[in-house]
Amino acid sequence: MIEGAIWRKWVFFYVPMALFLLFLLFPFYWMVITSVRPDGELYRPWNSINYNPFWTWKPTWDHVRYLFEETLFASWLWNTTFIALASTAISLVCGVFAGYALSRLNFPFAGSLGTAIFITYLVPQTLLFIPLAEIIRNYRLGDTPWSLILTYPTFLIPFCTWLMMGYFKAVPRELEECARIDGASRWQAMLYIVIPVAIPGILSAGIFAFTLSWNEFIYALVFLSSPAQKTVSVGVTSELIRGDVFYWGPLMAGALLGSIPVAIAYSFFVEHYVAGLTGSVKG
Amino acid sequence: MAISAVSATTLREAPPPRRQRLLEDERWLAFVLLVPTIVLLGMFIAYPFIRGILLSVTSSRVGMPGDFVGLANFYKIFNDGIFRTSVYNTFVYTGVTTVFKLALGLWLAMLLNRNFRGKAFTRAFILLPFIIPTVLSTFAWKWMFDPTFSVLNWLLYHFGLITGRINWLGDPDLAMISIIIVNIWRGVPFFAISLLAGLQTISPELNEAAAVDGAKPWQRFWHITWPLLLPVTMVVVLFSVIQTFADFQIVYVMTGGGPANATHLFATYAYQIGIGTGLLSEGAAISLAMFPVLFLVVIIQLLYIRRVEVR
Image (cartoon, rainbow over all chains, first blue to last red; front, side, top):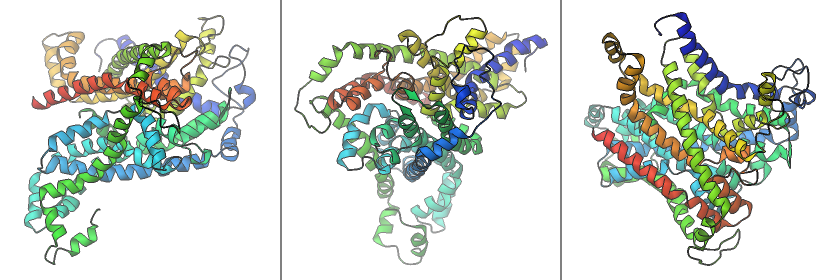
């Protein structure tokens, strides 16, 4: 650790660390406390006397109840889950296949195709949302979950492919060749020998893809219009704000509940997740 | 398109049919495996990109195909004050946040690279801003910056730093600072975790040897850690620049581009024109105006990765 006097530890480690944690985590604390605080306390001006904004002695479930009884929050949660799971599944199948082909098979244009897929990973959604909105309308997919299930893979597949390429490259060729000598077809060798070895990679790609699609906003905002079809982010944004009035209690409760599924998904796999993240960063 | 596992096993005894023999050929197998990816990326990336270019040279509106107008849309937006402000804002937003995200992220990564109690726990928690849906966490910030009920104002007031209220999102300069703070907050964990992974590949023996030779901590940082960390740093910075340059969510929630169009970025302005007012072709032109910069960054990224791989 840090050599020298105790004060050095405080100055160079504990204090900066505490400040970082405060900066990074305070908004979540604020979300939690707002979602259980009664409206009477919530809307007290910041300079009113004897008011402690950081704690409440009268926690309430009113905001959560409002969310489930007065809005379509339950449907938004379901829509988001369904869309995220379906687009993750599509992206994993495509990513595993493409990753295998690009890392283990010899065919013309393999290199340039790999580069092309990498470039699509770097194309932001905000570059294409306007023409895509038109195309989605022409395909008659507007306002259906399919508009997102089919478009989300465009930013998930490249990530999955690159991650899987890394994993497949680490599988020794001899393993596959042995299976081939034992009479397995190429397809079988891939399915029963190579893919099982890469399961940790598939898992982290899946979690990452799931969180990315849960997070996506602009496509969902542009392609979905009826309240019952919306995802959590879009529903909360458009249905809990009426003109200039923000329903802050339910809004924060919705933000919190909409965050919990991803937080759980990733907390179970945090180590894989970090490995996947850095794997992708190293390209 | 996929042959099920069951049929693949049962087929083993019988002489392989044509379909099976074709899959033994590497080129055919590669083709079959890549078709779904190519179809999806072609339909929803390549095709929209071409459509976007075609759209930007017409006068289309929502529900109206419009005529070919050449570069009129581009001419129009380059003479539009709000567009110019958006361009300026986007560069400031990207530049300032990237510097802070890198500096703070590196600092946090160095802190996390030490041994201390609750390390795993802390690492898991600091990733939260990056994990939680951006729109939802940005609402927490919007609420913290609320002009009347702002907890930040409460804190500053009680520490004696301000006497009156600060209208964070109502003043053009403060609004810009606010969205920059939120972007830094969201990006620091990504930088920290990626750089931490880079730090962990550096052998501690190098640092110990240098320490034995009498190198001061900052000398060790500049001559050992920083050069070894540079490849990861480059990739992280370039990736973050692309994401930040094309950002939409934070501004959309925090200010909607306001007050008085002062905080628009490319993407939010394109949304306002293209979707909000229905001028599809003009919106497409604004979006596409991002392309040259993004293209340049992608090229640098590709060249850099290739160079690293060759080494």
